[in-house]
Image (cartoon, rainbow, N blue to C red; front, side, top):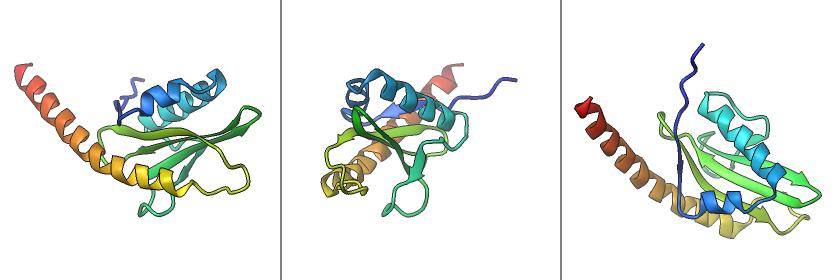
Length: 129
């Protein structure tokens, strides 16, 4: 059985920020993103409040090395776009810090442009085949 993978697209520094995390966090987030790519909801994922429904999801890991988050959107049916990856500094408050929420909002706007560019390039490649 051949399951189609939705491509992963990255906004700004999100990929570099994720790759700077501890190896076990990278592995767990990588597995979560793979689950999304094949159309499943990741075990460590939770819809991020304040973004209207379940199209923006936060992967969450709390461990000895700290508290880590990666945020992606599935607003665009053909791709998964990773918006932000970060280590949460405060362990008291479960909520995502306001500055990170604002960054995610701004990166959603950038994600629309990235998706349009990806779609345009894909269309050009489809015409050649």
